[in-house]
Image (cartoon, rainbow, N blue to C red; front, side):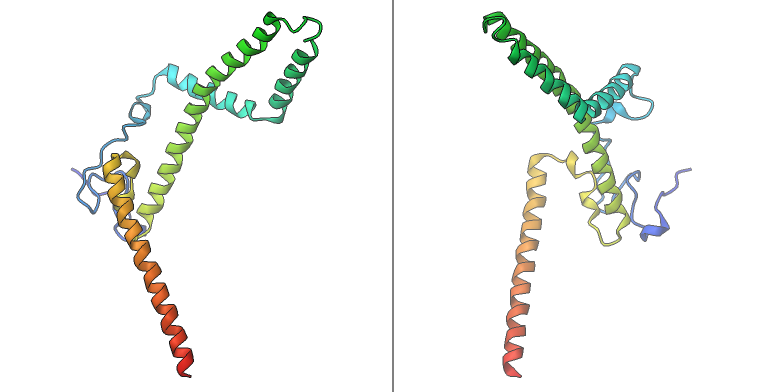
Length: 179
């Protein structure tokens, strides 16, 4: 027997786990993180996620910066010893290239996870507010054309709001002159 999962605390607004939103649009699983849902993530992915979180946290620390800075200073000081040779230059170039290449993947994984968490928090806020437009839940899953249409709608709303404020301001000035 299927039951509705609407919460009374949000005035009957559909929750993110409902099948339909008030727009009638089917809620599709997140394409971006579909394979990462509980029970779907592989042991390798879970290990990589923990590793990436630890590495990105550590590399953003003052200690990591100090170590990297110290390595560059040692490399620069040894320049005269090695006669600023091509091999001496190759050491820093190769080392920094390898580290940069690997860090791109670790940072991107952490950024993807953080972005997904922020989207879920925003989705929860949209669902919790009775007057919120639930069509914005999972908006990151829409294609560019659909996002442009929504952005245009909000631009028009902003223009109308500005026009209304100007009108109200002008009426307020007229009312003060009448006094």
